[in-house]
Length: 191
Length: 199
Image (cartoon, rainbow over all chains, first blue to last red; front, top):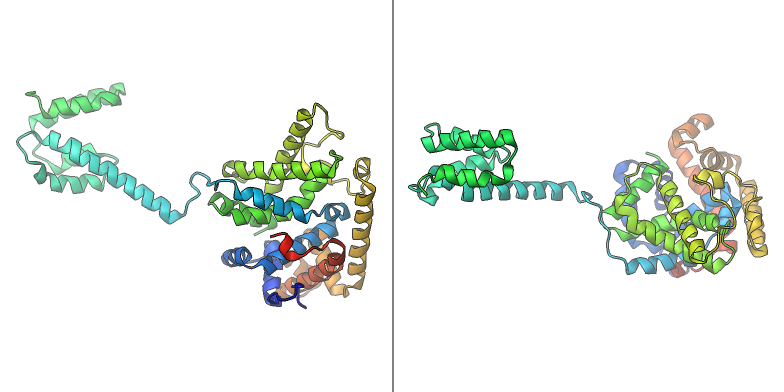
């Protein structure tokens, strides 16, 4: 039994149409869903059959619903959709993209921390190029960069002690916006 | 997986930027939405305009759809609000009161409510569709008829139908497919158009 009626169009294999029918009922393995959806996107005959199977189901359940068949309406909506911008839900991207975005964000935060904060914590007598080791450590632990940096320098200087004292006071008061100023003050007490 | 999962999969595709997936949802639900609107809007061209507007509104709102309800339930409410806005713009009230849920409208399948606003043409077509479906069902071999009725009218899963009919699930799948083909073949002369007209 062949479903495709139009002359000159490829004849749909019954196996394909049976898969489509089962997919409409939600009776395919999830792995096969993508295959059917991708085929529907490029195969007009399969898509026409999608419409007929749905119409048959509607007609079996309600003659009135089937009698409201308006083929032109679908075409009108499809044309109107062309003018619509693509709508993407927040967080609807692929897992890979989300992981990449997270990784880039963490790396960027760690980079900023390493370039801006750590050299100042070390004091003005240390060249920026020497900050490589702490940068790596803080990059892997961006959530608590200050603590990790402290661990990386067990011989903490009085300057750093001062920083920690100031940080504890601020953390208790919850005044994060001015923390950068204290970092700078702690790292460069002479200025 | 269920039919609702199929819709959800399509919705998720749309939410990732796939407009084609939305066209499938439009194709699937255009008759139910048109029928809903035809209960309250007399002018057929108005029905199509409001239906189109409802589908486009739904597309725009789809990024915020989280799947807490079935897609059709969500779409139904958008269609109702669009129809209400249509009447408000015309300074009129809806001819028939809308139900809050799709079931309120769709539970009365005897056509009593529809006859309030349906045109003679629509009533005739509905009658012809009913006759075509009955012809198709009567001509089906009994095993195909049982399988399609259990699926479409009773909403049973393939596993449940296989148990009820004492046959493998693969056989159920094949029977339902062949029954659908037969019903569709009976409907084509009545409702068919050139395939390329639609897509």
